[in-house]
Structures are given as structure tokens and as C-alpha cells.
Length: 148
View 1: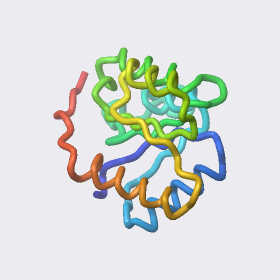
View 2 (view 1 turned 120 degrees about the vertical axis):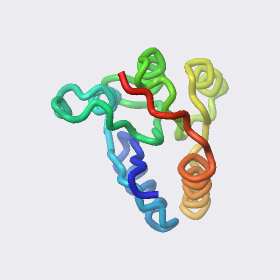
View 3 (view 1 turned 90 degrees about the vertical axis):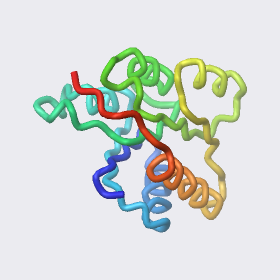
């Protein structure tokens, strides 16, 4: 699975640590880029700000996106990346603590590929991350790269 980068967009340091630990415990050894707010996530994807000058063709294989983010919320991030030719086909899994029906509906309407509520217990959380990794990084067939 090397070479398939994951973009984790998560502002909560505890949830970030749990996600990284769950990936490691499940032998998902992909490089993980962590963005701690919506603006940083878009800067990474579009190579602006701190990421200016980096190769614009290097995109993550998978985005794990929290909804409740500072500066720019997850739904806005999702909307912007779906409106861009280069990023619109990247699989996005909304990984959030929200079970609000309107968040679920809005996520799918804005182009989420999956919506996963973060389990409270670590063992269940680790299992959810393992299943996400297996499906989105190994089983799922992604579209060919689009270079613009």
C-alpha cells in the first residue's frame, strides 16, 4: 500500500492520534498527511500556502474528512474539491462524530463517497479504520489519474 497517501483532515488532536494509531495497528503503512483545518486541507490539495511549489500532480489516494473544522468546515472543503477537475474524483470518507441526519444528507449531496460515524470505543474505532483502509486502499478501483 506504499505510495498511496491518505489526507486526514482532523482538528481534534485526540482523534488524530487515535486515527494514526488505528492505521498503524492495522498495518496500514501509507503516508498520512494531516491537515488540522479546512483551509490547510485545501492548501495541500491545491498546493497553496505552505504547500506552494510542491508537485500539483501528487494527490492523496483517500481523504478522511471531519465535518466540524476551524476556518473552513468539512462540507465547504468537500464542495470545493468536488468543483475542481483535478480533485473531484478523489474518494472522500466523511469520518465524524456527527450522527445528525442533515450532516449525512449534506455530505452525500456534496459528493462524499462514504459517511462513517466515529465509534467511541478504540477497538471499534480501530476496526472501522481497518475496514476503511482495506476497502478504499486495496479493494476499491480508483479512476485513472487525471493530469491537467
